[in-house]
Length: 294
Image 1 (cartoon, rainbow, N blue to C red):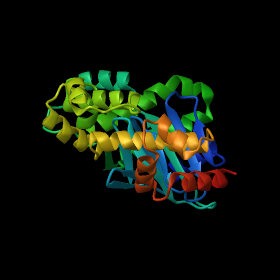
Image 2 (cartoon, helix red, strand yellow):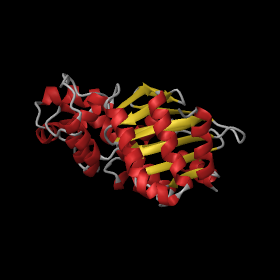
Image 3 (cartoon, helix red, strand yellow):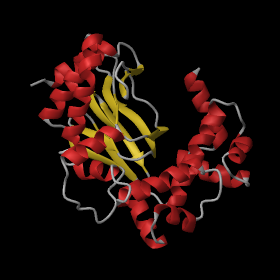
């Protein structure tokens, strides 16, 4: 069985400096960070994150998730999250392995290894579970394959399949099973989330989104909040603020233009919503982030 030190050393070999590193294996990414980071908005796509060293915090709505080598984070739908590395030093950097959840492979495994349906309410879109020796062994072998490109090409898909199998048969298995079924509560909410993400600049009429999900208005509200820890309008606001922040920092837009681009007619309402989410007015936040990147 692999040890945590072997997992850490394998990531460190292939992430030799701070940053995010795509691998030869599709959907696999290694991350290294030598200092704590300020909370940053990001969309967590369906993915699983295994930490080999350090600690990270993710904020989804009012829910807070802390993860480190003792547990892994699983995101089953695309969610707007505030993420921050909270434990990292140059001597002991934050090191993690991120794997996209391959829907096709999950679907095959779900058919081969079905679980009884227990879904009464759509499961949370983010969840934490204890790391197991089997997962540690499988993830370590996956990263170690990068030492030999030929082996990675041949054996990488098998190693990824093992990891997905262990997730599917573990505590989060029901969530992953639900991901493969469009008629599950999770699948219905996932459809609504995709629609809101594609249309967040416009009006978010709850009756219309509930119809897309195939639910009544009241049922949709309850299940949407169960998955996202937010109401549909709060979810849309998060998406708007993340995009506005990107437009100001990377695109050089001022606050009024950024607010208008993401769907706000009132600059003052945009500033209030922005400050409520990020703690400071939009112009102040954008200037701070530009200086941090300089």
